[in-house]
Image 1 (spheres, rainbow, N blue to C red):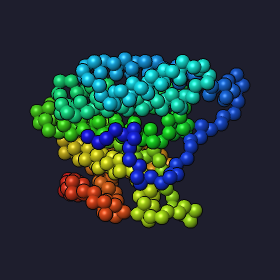
Image 2: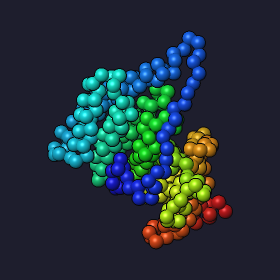
Image 3: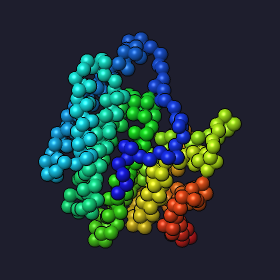
Image 4: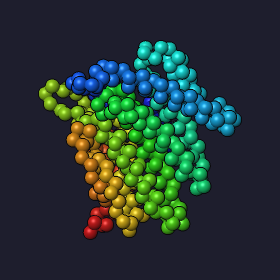
Length: 332
């Protein structure tokens, strides 16, 4: 399993690849609270809710530690972050920085769920309990985004979480569903009975991975942007900011292959996702997901990047090319 993604490798990211979000300004409507007052109320609501969620997560970590019977690095780090969160929340609420609190909570959730994901992988996703556990982990990893949205501070317009944490949360949910689906595709009897469930997991997983790829727009290369390395410039202009972005492309392409292979006979569902490969945060458009079309688009880009700017890094494209060949024959 890949290393904890709250500290993902960012070797391909330039020193300054993004900017701060802008919450925007709204005119004062008669009878409504002034924008500053409304924002302050929203921030206080975030602080209270983060404190509640932190207490629940700390209790969950305690249960995990007791069940494990030994100290675990990730659970210890998660617990320490939540203890710091509790101390900060104990100060005057007006003085608390909701962005710092939410970041601490998010980092704790990433560590806590990473511990549980490792356990699932080690046990090869037990058939009797994995579905509920995966659902629970997805819920934990979705909580920070939900919290922001519920308080009218959409993550695409307000830098309360930041692009890297948003990417990380989407990556972890998508990668978890990728690993779970990989395990399910090996169970022939299960597939015969519940291929509709596999399709749901695949659609959700692909959606998370594409969402991860779309948080940041590709760097527009022009005379005002200078790079010492041309290959790095090509990667950034393609929206590839780290090796995790490449993995997300390969994972989503492979999930499209599973969907096309195992779920092709099912009735189409109106499951709309942003189907652009990268940079769709700038020009978002949603449409029903076509496994072959999306998989072909994203794997062609994956192969192009791996055999172009990353040629010397020896990224493996064999599986991607085999899947593209499958799509080609399926189309014909």
